[in-house]
Image (cartoon, rainbow, N blue to C red; front, top):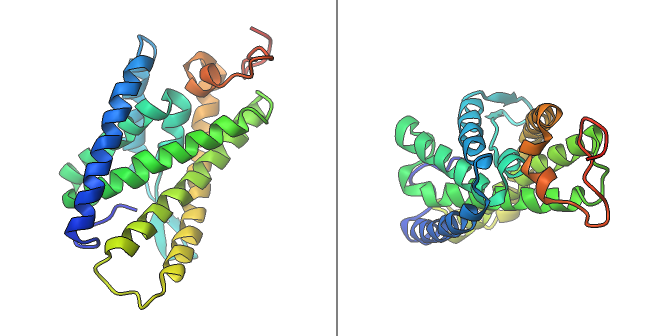
Length: 233
C-alpha cells in the first residue's frame, strides 16, 4: 500500500497530489468544527498510536507478504472522519520523510488511498452499522472489525485505479488479476486490522465511552445513547 517512487508515472502522481491537497484542505476546514478540549488531545494520541502500531508488521503467509495497521477505521471511530484523515496523513508524511516508507513523490497517491479513501469508507460503514447493530460491546466490536477490514480492501482498490491510470509496467491487460490479488491479500491484512481496531476501540469505550467519536455523533434520534459499559444515560 505504501507506493514507492517510480511505480506510478509523474503526471498521475501530480494529479493525485492535487486531489490529496484539496481533500486535506477540506478536512482541515471541516475538522476545526469538531476540535474541542476533548478531541484535540485525543487526535494527538490517535496519531501517535497509529504511528507506533504501523511499525509492527504481521506476516500473511498465504500471500508471502506482511501487513500492518492502516488506521483509517480506528481514527474514524475515535476522532471522526475529518480529523481522522488528518491523523493518518501526518503519520504517512512522517513515515515517507523519515523512514522512507513510501516514496515522497508518491505521497499524494498514498494519502489519497490510506488517509482519505480508507477513512471515508470506514466511516460510511461505521455510520451504517451503528444504526443497525445494538450499542453493546458486541455491536461496537463488530462495527469496528467490519469497517476496518473492508476499508483496507477499498484503499487497496484505490491503488488499482491509480495503476490503471499511470502504472509504469505493462500488465498485458490483466488489470482484473491485479485487482483480485490486491483485494485478496488486503482482505487478509484487513482481518488483522479489524482485530486491532476492535480491541482498541472497545478498550477505550469501556473506560471512557465519551471519547469514542462514533458513539457521540452517530445516534438514532428516537433512541437515547446507551454506554458500552451498560446502563442508560
